[in-house]
View (cartoon, helix red, strand yellow):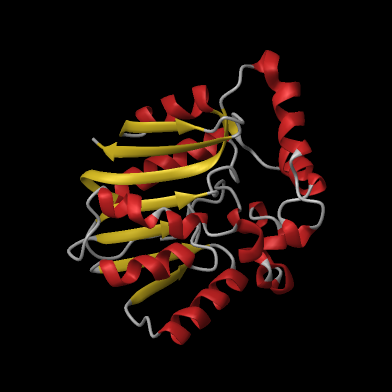
Length: 233
């Protein structure tokens, strides 16, 4: 089903770098192994062979490919054709044949089959503005069975406005010197100017209004990142 004409253009919001094959080739060096490191937590939360996992914003597929042997079904969803091209090539190389790969975004993914038991969404929700975050979260809730789990990680600011300048400057000071070393100061500054990270004290009510109960909320010591385990009510 086509989205209404007034819906956000997710491909335009993805950022041109995520659509560039040359950038995507070095993407995993920048982001590190954090996505794969989340698999043990998903398993602790009950992810098993009888379950369906949707990886929304799967990127080059690190989590989806690692999770596939442990699930009945994994659906890897990303808006970027360049990201999905790498994911498909990796799946082929690893012999992972039971992986559904879908080009779509938070606002456009149309699920087929039984509802999911788990949704994983890492460093994706900052792309749409807050209005569209709520739309996306409500759509995620609709993908899950009652009691289903959303594991959400993103750039989420847990400082108060009065502490903004100091917290942001501390974060920028720790940026990588070169793009191949990680996110540079220029890249983080561009994120602040052009993308839509929000405050924890705005996002958490959004989650609750969208049909979730927050089971666990973790905020980094830098007050820049947050991780949530949420249960579909």
